[in-house]
Image (tube, rainbow, N blue to C red):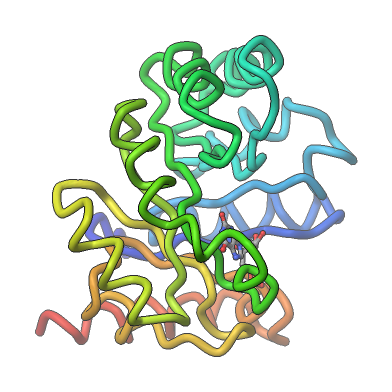
Amino acid sequence: MVKVDSKLVIALDVFDVDFAVDFARKIGREIFAIKINWPLVMVRGSSIISELSRYSRSICDLKIADIPNTNRLIAEKVAENGAWGVISHAFVGSDSLKAVVQAAGDVRVFSVVAMSHPGSADLISSSLENLVKISIEANVYGLIAPGNDLEMLRKVKKMAPGMKILSPGIGAQGGSASHAIANGSDYIIVGRAVYDDPDPLMKAREFNRELSNIYH
Ligand code: XMP
């Protein structure tokens, strides 16, 4: 079954490369994308991006947050490995974020404007408007906003109505996939609720069903 319209992004925050490749091979065509974070890159190197991109779109969640030159180097390596998207922080400022967008080329840049964990209330949540402004100015493709904070999600959608919103915070962090979509998310990210399940394939398909039921 090929689900070209899936809104599901699976976060593979695992060290087990064999599991990641096998899982991507089995589910890649049914989901929107695989999200790759530091755990896989640390054990396999940047080639894991091209390995997994054989089976699915890949989004590299490296949360890039450095000076423009270092950001450029990281974004170039992501692009060289054929990623579909990359996630960068916006808080480092417009010059740093613009460096990612420029170096990424055709790779879509998503910037973090709000986060899903409780500690985001310490600092980042109060900067939402600035972070969205920096992101719009840098011409990013999309924004990361929490699927477990629907009020915040609606605010982000209102501030940047034309931008794609990718939302973590589903499952293990308490958010609901269908509620996130109903409140402005275009795609939802699920990690532990899938890969920690005794049957990750079945669980991913369950999320896909939940998401497709919104429209049928
Ligand atoms: P879980 O296991 O909680 O994994 O489903 C969520 C995935 O998404 C990442 N994550 C975030 N990324 N802003 C981001 O850019 C966030 O607020 C955020 N919250 C979670 C996390 O690294 C994991 O890969």
